[in-house]
Image 1 (cartoon, rainbow, N blue to C red):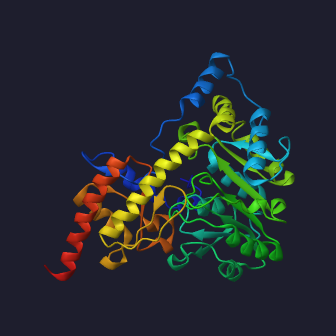
Image 2 (cartoon, one colour):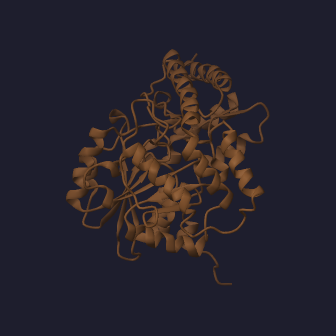
Image 3 (tube, one colour):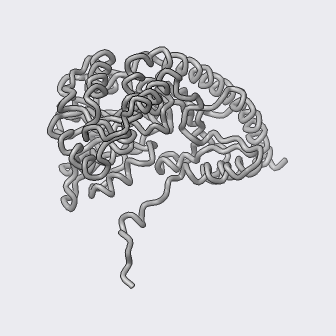
Length: 394
């Protein structure tokens, strides 16, 4: 019988995050610190708007690009936050989560079979590399370094660019490391991008969750708006993961082609979620502040806990992840995470789930209650002490 499967799909590895999530879901008394999902419920006024949209009978398709009112709110938001002017009619597309925007953005820009390259700094979100492959691009990995706090440097970018390079993925604030890029960092790489005439896909889904000044979008820098596809959404900032609401802003000619793919594959983003998204953008700033304060408290607690147990970890200033180094134990990230789960019933994600440069690190999410984090850190301190005793042969 003829093989019914596509080789390029079969060869893609499943997400390394889900493996530990699935195991811990079947373990009694286990604590999971592995999922990047806010523990907050969507704020009530946003939920109410979704409910009200159903009560009013807003149950039909919207336009392919999304409700004009929502696209206009996104434009207001981008101008208010970043000083960037977008045209709601031509430069904004509402997608099913930010992940869809990543996928169709690459498909709209890559010519399969021509060897075009997508630069992917790692460690980073698990979807970038598979999406590049499925779009017909060659993924080129830039291994970020702990000594640079996992930021992308202009020299690293310059070294990776070839005459086949078309897109740079810019995943900051970063999942899994929590690293951020400040304005001076972005200015340095923007010079390279313009000089080498490449495009940027800037994933800014964690842009509201920063703890060291305000997030700066690379699209706000001179000469960058016309070569940047900015991806964002509602999942992280407004605790709306299950609503599956994202969006892309960018040059009209690119958004037009992304909309075409979206039209044939999806039709439109969920109508109820779009009405809720309007309310989130209009009246959700205080909700973000409250959640950010809570996340920051948890972040500072984890950094203190690592210091107490003598575990090396650079201080992250974005998203809701920490990325402690476990190299001292002479184990792979997978081995450490597996033993930690089996012996202490705490699930964290091996750094290698986010690329080979994550080896020797562990991703811990602090999108969990402080109480749960304290219990997990007590278990981790005990586990670390046991491993150190093993090394000494005690």
